[in-house]
Image: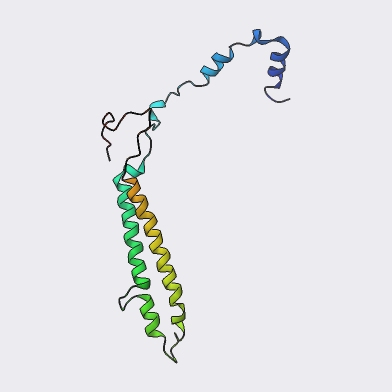
Length: 145
């Protein structure tokens, strides 16, 4: 027999007068504050307002852009330029320049990714619009980063 089945059947048969507390009391007792309630972080985590996250995202885009330039840049040390210069008859890399379109696609995909991240950086720097019930921007305390 499950743990609470006997108690449940007893309550059904004998009635609620034998129940030690009312539903309202049981409901309120279910929400008692734990002993270590002050240890819980109740502040919302808004990384959009924390400059360290924005700076980290800017570092990502810089690295991605640097890698994209290395893949498909105009400099002679870019991978695409090297593919073209190594594609000579008799070379072990003969025909490698056929893959330059793949490099261009990869660089394009990386550029799209940086645009997505840059869009998020821009939107993270903006404060969300105040709700109708919430305090106005003048009434709120200044945000700390």
